[in-house]
Amino acid sequence: MLTVEKIGGTSMLQFQNVLKDIIGYPASEGFRYGRVFVVSAYAGVTNMLLEDKKTKAPGIYQQFIKGEDYESAMDELLIKTLEINETMIDLGLDSKVCKDFLVERIEQTKAYLKSMEDIIASGYVGRESIFSAARELLASIGEAHSAFNTVNILRNNGINSELVDLTGFRDSKQLSISERIEKSFKNVNPHEAIIVATGYTKGIEGIMRQYERGYSEITFSKIATQLQADEAIIHKEYHLSSADPKIVGVDKAIPVGRTNYDVADQLADIGMEAIHPNASKPLELAGINLRIKNTFEPNHPGTVISNDYIGPQAKIEIIAGSDKIVILEIHDTSMVGETGFDLDIMKKFKKYNISYIMKTTNANSISLVIWQSDLSDLLVSDLEAEYRTVTVQEAAIVCVIGSNIAMPSILARAANALAKNDINIKCISQSLRQVNMQFVIDRDMYAKAIVCLNEDLCFADTNH
Image 1 (tube, rainbow, N blue to C red):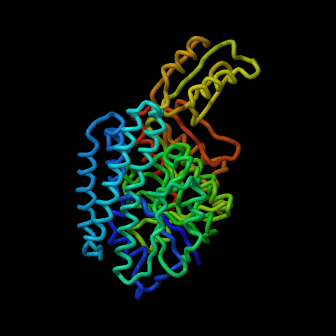
Image 2: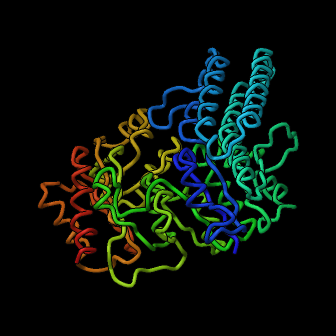
Image 3: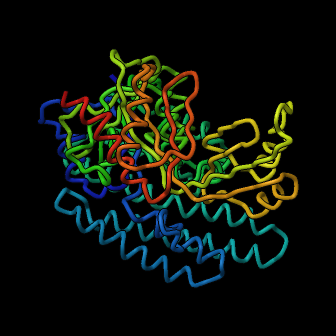
């Protein structure tokens, strides 16, 4: 059996659990080769390299493009990464070997960045292409660090292990992402060693340019399809659950168990990614099942996402959503009976590169739900110049999702759960496939809505 497995940054930071419970030791029960691990950077490292994923606080990349003292920030990065190394010495990490690797990689990166500065100063090359290359270069450091450490620890524990460094550091060959993966794995036998690959892959198209912070899942997916894996596995610090355990509590968050790629797409559309949509599609087309496992519950089978699964009984699998959306409503009495009235609206959305999450209509109004971060004053001005009334309102969206929810009672139960908790529904949507019911509500009701829907539609049914 061949599995390709991705380990997230939080799990990597708890590597004692990864070593003991996921990889295992040669003498332990269930240990096997035939496993390729794609590793993320240790939690927090990519934030230091680029910018904080949540707060957007600037990292080394931001300091570089602003002409600030990025070299001192890289020195701080070295201190931080060496501190991470220190926590893993008891696991078998060779402190000197791993320090030498880090120092060499970071010093060479400084040299590359200095050369980029000189090229920018010449005025002969556009800044944007240089900045993009710098972002790619910096992003690669985190995964190179964690992958090198992992192989070092495994070998020092008597485990045959091989590093596949996809970062292309010091490699001038102009390869696409897929070509680099194919070339790098050409002479690798995953049945004779634990293979550890970097989550970052260098390619002419730029993995950061195309996929931003979801790039390690793209690498994971491409390796799984290239090697025709029997199963793809993602090890996270939590289960794929009926609802966010941080909102409903761990005791009320029920592991999903089984679902399909259609449901995974619904989650991705509202930012609750089980896996990056550009990573799930190749797995789906190749017929490779994806398993989401909790690193800290190694004996739990996790949740399997497959092509054709449909729940044997009608039930809600997941309650998800976001409180970072806005409703954009266009009201115009001339719209009644007008063919293609919304075509011009969609053209404006395309002009500003904005995708909507949800769309509802009646005789004279169209309501579109978009990410607040995508809201553009220029778009609103464009719409106001052409249509009678344009309203923008902050809101939240909650979704009731499942592979088999095509039952008359489901929508009624969901609406009733919201109503009895005094939560007004502003907009509602469901397509003919009936895998996702979407409710737009007041933003300050978001957490309350998640809790009550999970309680009434998921937790109560499980207990029953």
